[in-house]
Length: 343
Image 1 (cartoon, helix red, strand yellow):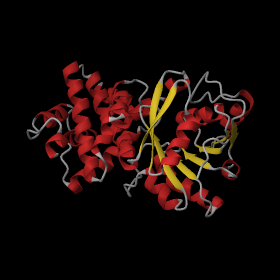
Image 2: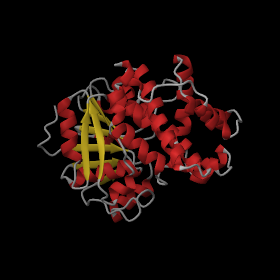
Image 3: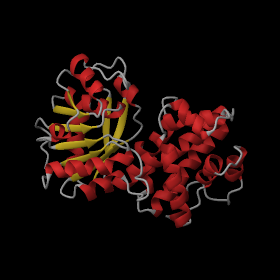
């Protein structure tokens, strides 16, 4: 069990924007933090200039934050290992970690939003399977890293079945401008973080097409209904979606130009192909990969998801953008808040 009153040794694996911000918050709170990156150039910049200019220009890092390209060096003696690599890489990195730490019991924390391709495993499930001796937690919420770095008041959700771990992470990462709330529904928090990326693409398209405030409000609220409906069928608590990890993250991702998925949707709404939109962005938006998997899973479970089905038709089946609006408007009549009628 982690004693959250003591100084921890923490490894953060992945030097993107969110991994860097989380590593720095922990270092600011006096913990020994090692940030693992694949790029020696980025490592050297962090060591000498205390900057990660590729992802967070002008964000000064704590002098005590260490950077390394050696996974063994990063995890040596760590009591907490945080995974901030892309979802497709979490499994392989966790296996490499397992080979280093053996049966050591520590905390494994996912900072990654997404679903593993083919297996449909969420990141907590990947960590449980690859690191069975470890206590697992996830951190997810409306977390635009650049705003956190700027000190804009922000909050997130830490989810774990172990209450002491939730409380320890609250203490390790809190700051005057960053607050952590807790939730024991790990699966629901993770699903919310993965699913909202799909709807950010839809919202970006709507903005580019000049749709009104009524339409955008309808898209976000029906997105929330689809997310919670799908998640409940998979065993999550639909009430989780009313919190920061659900509606909070959905609002940020569906409205902010800092969101990669939103920008992909904007480009598609302007008439660019998916390939062109992704090329403009310079990196793959997680929502595109998630859309494939959720579309197939929803069909398998016979879950009605008109926005998912409509977006899939546009991106991969050659349908016109008007197809999405059509799918949304011709759906079967339904209650506004389905879970009220269930109860």
